[in-house]
Length: 312
Image 1 (cartoon, rainbow, N blue to C red):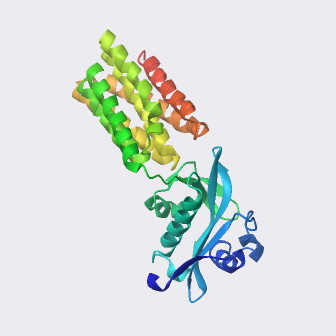
Image 2 (image 1 turned 180 degrees about the horizontal axis):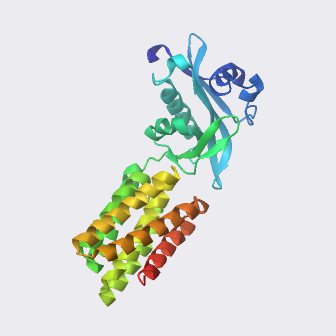
Image 3 (image 1 turned 90 degrees about the vertical axis):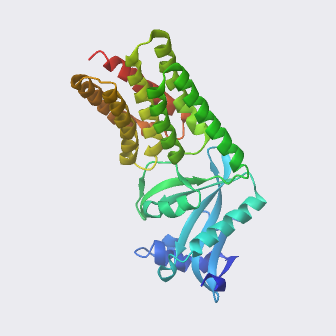
């Protein structure tokens, strides 16, 4: 079917009816016209068969965290053509042309929560809590930053995680490494970038303190630092997912503590304190969105709270 399709730049008037039918059917036609549509720099694309647009999107010049960017808007595919790869083909074409002309630009969009999976398969990532657009329903912000140096970045990311695990082994031993591995696997699944690892490094401070003092209780704040960090990495996709990711680290910690023959009372106290801290992290973490130093501070605060909770 796609062999009959032509992906091309078009005038906005060509795609407004398709936008309206798919995205704004319950609203007046003007609701399918967006801010920036008529800007000279805006690019409108359509995948057409026989001159009839079946899928469309627009790229609007904007800014993203102080950088030049393209905002993806108005992506829609005719109901009868969905699932056939038209949107994917059109988006790749539009992104490739924009990259060719302006290599330093990043891409972002307000994506319907129902479409997150589509974008993630194309390399986009969620970077916000869900929010509601009155005319369109629940959305999240997503970002895409094409890079030609994916392998070097992946190598740097893995090198940083290996260094973290090596330090955890030297300072704390196998239990600390086991928990570190859980956190690293979660980090890979959440955000495969070196910058996202900033929040995990301070956890080694508790490993240093353990190495100096031989105090096994410091394993708890180490664990809660990792749990808070992982919860924050996943929370951009929803609070429940963030809580579940952090809870998985806590569960790993409690399993290790059980193997260390911790008493039922100690396990119960640690579980209760961990649950309270994780709930607080999930509640306050949204204010740290896209601010790595604030996110790191939240993880540090969680670890300190766990340390103070040892007195219970």
